[in-house]
Amino acid sequence: VVQKNLVFVVGLPARLADPEVLKKFDYFGKFGKIHKVVVNQSTSYAGSQGPSASAYVTYCKPEDALRAIKSVNNIQVDGRTLKASLGTTKYCSHFLKNQQCPKTDCMYLHELGDEAASFTKEDMQQGKHQEYEKKLQDQIIGNNRKQTASPPPPQINTSSLKDSWPCTVQNVKESRSNRTKDSTQKTEGKSSRSKNKSEGQK
Image 1 (cartoon, one colour):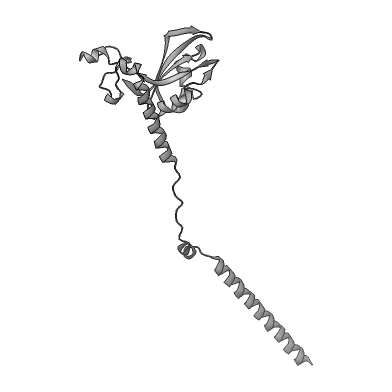
Image 2 (cartoon, rainbow, N blue to C red):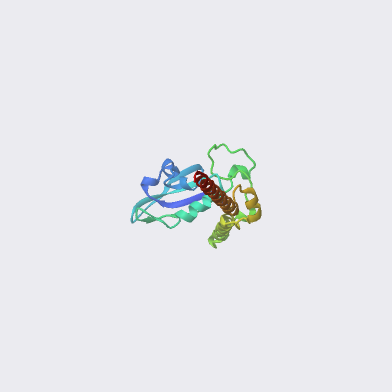
């Protein structure tokens, strides 16, 4: 059964084969909140670059796991290529027998998984689980595009904006014109008074 929130990564160098290191923001922590990390040292194999390890990174949200896979798969670390994909889990043998599982940290399923995410060995050999993963990736990309699509700019009612604004350009022009008229009238009044005064002195 494919686990939507579980990332399986192989090709980890020895310096990264530590759950606490992989949880850091520099590595898998940057993609979202991590529930659990399990490093599998027993599957280490020695390649041209020395031994490497695999790890299971369980995220709280499936979309975070898919983003991690998209970013990490096929990147080069210490000269080796990391491979990341959604992890698969079998049903716990105790669950299949309708028994209580004695292991508190059991990695197997204790509830029925999604039928669409369940595959036989033959299905997995044909790569059907990878097709399922690609569909999930496409769904996430489609949802992100919908969310990031910029909404149309709001229509602004310029008439109401003018009414609500305390001082429009037209009002400024009118007030300036009125002030100019007032100052002209005052100047004319002063000059006429001065003229009358000078004539009276004569």
